[in-house]
Length: 508
Image 1 (cartoon, rainbow, N blue to C red):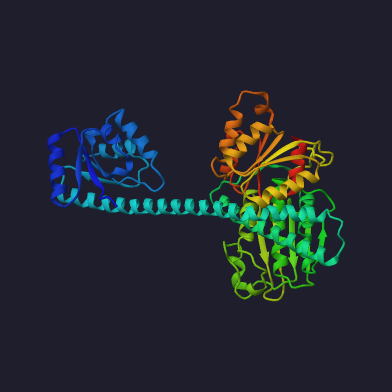
Image 2: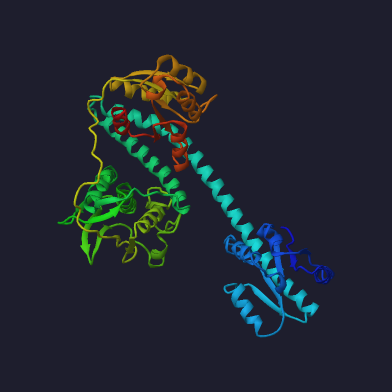
């Protein structure tokens, strides 16, 4: 860490030389700045302490200096030492020039060199602490960046093998095979693939929520419909555990202003959490109601319960109770953290109650209600059936993904071509001129971004008309933006739901 220096700001070179000499004799770094304008040219982080004489406080220099102080980063509060004449004018000077500065020492003339050295030492020690805080913040930011890069790569590597597995399960469900053992093992694979996909999504959601990068697509929503959608999606989990799930919707619409996908995620996480901690044959009750101007949904279970000393910790990241871990059916301890942060982004609150171990638990989420909906602001849903035949080019270096996508596309009646590298994909695109290209991003030889840019750079009509779909394991917001900027029409994250892919093909 650098040794911060004091800067003496005075138009008098003799005074400056004397002050610099005093400080250097005391072992302190010191330099001279003739004017405040000269000081303002230095980076704030290069200044340890500013010693100002009142003669240097002239306009417009003082105005510029105050702007520099106001623009300091959060870690910085530059120590100031003001040398001024004694008298009533001193108070007026402080009020006029430094009305809000809390890191200001005032020395009156005639100046005692010992007082100057002591004040500068205090200021430099304070500045040194500020630099330590700055370095810790930089280290934290760097650690978060490395973590996010790791999670993005991990998600990509996990999603790639999940993609062909999900495609294969979809195909198996459409085979006319009624053998019980086949059906059970197929559904088992389906549940575990979905579980892995949710874990990957949860990891990335935690990162985005911490950095404030979750963008909500707000619209007017009936909480009842979100509950119905979330509980239906959780049926495979509760059914597999032999749970009885009771869903009690409110008798009236519960209108809230919310992102439908995120609200379903909140409710789904709560139901999944209840299923993990409820023994086979237990009961989960999901209930909606209106209460004191709020729309509430509660998820109550007959599971293992929560110890009193854990009640306030259940929403902490990576928290799991050691007493119930053996029955947790896996998980990373992040689902409830996501619930709390998403609910707070919607100006809501979440509460938890439990009578102790073995007595179950209840989570209650509350959102502000809004006036009744006047007209629909939801986009019309598109029917996935009746997709017209298209020529589709699949560019992916994973053979299983290429093969399983080819099976799906052929089943839907499309013509399919394949490429397993960037250069080969670009050449095949020019040769076969597909209607749609499904392109992976991390390709050997040429990235998916480069393929899209090369195609869009062509001047023929096909290059403008072809639909480019990024089908990738990279799912961060920055990845989506980069894909769209490169020329892709849409960005789908593996493992893609085949029904979503079918609708995408139809809409294009």
